[in-house]
Image (cartoon, rainbow over all chains, first blue to last red; front, side, top):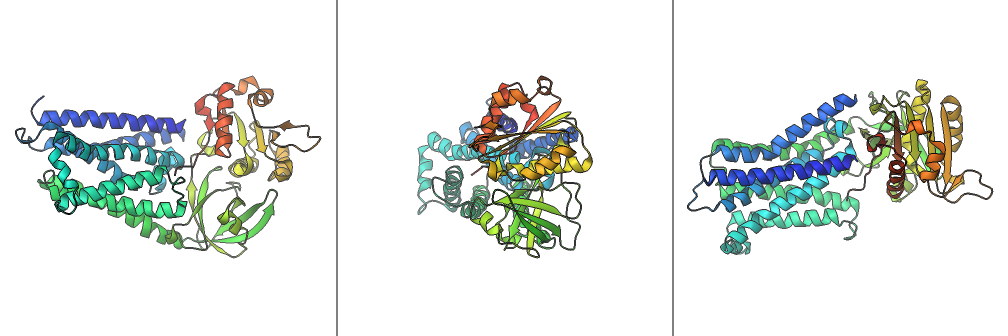
Length: 32
Length: 445
């Protein structure tokens, strides 16, 4: 069960990082 | 205790998340990129590389067996997380060059190590090492690599891989042009070197100065050898019943040849403790040659699988399988020493009746504790009147009262992985909530 929480965190942090990367790249390039 | 662990866990999760996302924040704080010469997708690719690399650097922290980090989560969870986040960071780092190749095929030229600049040579070598690292971790058994060999090369490859990735960042230079950006990556490099120094030099020296001596040995039923161990000129450590320690024999802690064993004795017994080790392989067979007076190194205690973590439990169900009984024995012996009269149900699963380790002592403990014991024997002897075969929901339902199935009782399960998986399914089927079933699993690579 505890392993499932760990997996959920890994998915959440990976998605959060991907969104932030996209956002930052486009914000910095001035397209957003 | 439970609340404290929850708060500490949340604090570490927040710190960890901030640390892995720091390169992005630093990136955002820098000057605007030149959009004319650099498509945004190049920056997406670089961002993925940065986050992946910061996660990989922190892998040295979460695999560094730091007690303050292991305590709130449990050692097994920290290692499982190491593996899961390792795969996620591999995908991020791997996506970095792939995206570049898709954006502009001229980047493919950098793959030729003979003509490529040093920044690309460092990057390509780092990614190749990373691929080896992940493949050997995921398929160690298929590659027929011994655990010892794999562990040694896993550390070497990880260090080289990160060092080369950092060289790549500094040689590219675009993202370390400002002093505080440089400081960030110097900080990550220092963290890597610091963790290597701590785990490979400082901690082994500390362990060498805190050695242990074997006080006594004895054979137990079921080819199990018990070592009574006492600290040699120091106070040793205190533990909670159910925890384990890493044992090094015939070598120093520098050799990285330790093995984990549950502490089997009572947590109330001061000044010494016991390990009961079943003969299951070359190391455990050799353990039987150890004798009183021999020197050992013991690194512990570790593990969230312990009785004291759940003090609110009104009833306790213990389900050991085979030599999985050792942490459970520690719990039972501690309860007896503490005069703990909470109702206990012990489902002790074994292959054969003759090899049931501690069976005579369990009988004695029954009289000291408020305990009912149910033996489940896979291959029962002729005339066996107890439960036979594998522990299943019918047997569990037959003995566990209805009012034990709620939040007021805790189940401690310890044994071979297939047995734990099967019994966990049966426990869920009869109505136990996930949160009340406790186990630790240690097959990672």
